[in-house]
Length: 102
Image (cartoon, rainbow, N blue to C red; front, side, top):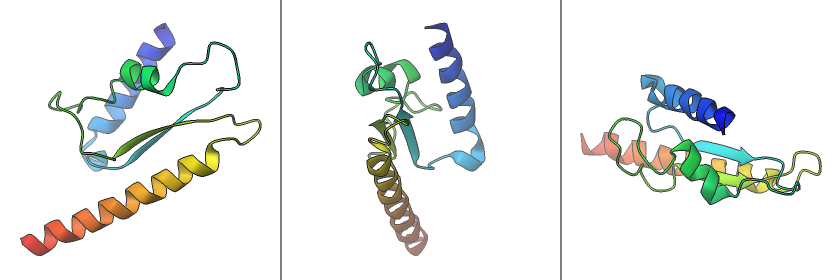
C-alpha cells in the first residue's frame, strides 16, 4: 500500500503540471495475470483518478482510462493504446471547438 501512495503522489504531481492539464491519461494495470492483482476500479480509487487534482471534482469524461493488461503476453495493450488514441482525438476535437467559440 505504501508504494501505491507514492505512485499516487507522483501521478498527482505530474497531472498538476500546467503543461499536462487536460491531457488524456492511460493507466496500464499490469500483472493482471497474477493472483491478487488490483482490479481497475480499485486502482482508480487508490490513485485518486476519480477526482480532479486541482478542484476535487470529477475530471472531464473519457480523459482517463485504466486498461487491465499483462505485459508478458501483451494482453490488453492494444486495447489500451486504442483507448488512448480515441481520447487524443476527442481532446483535439474539443480543443478545436473551444478555439472556434473564442
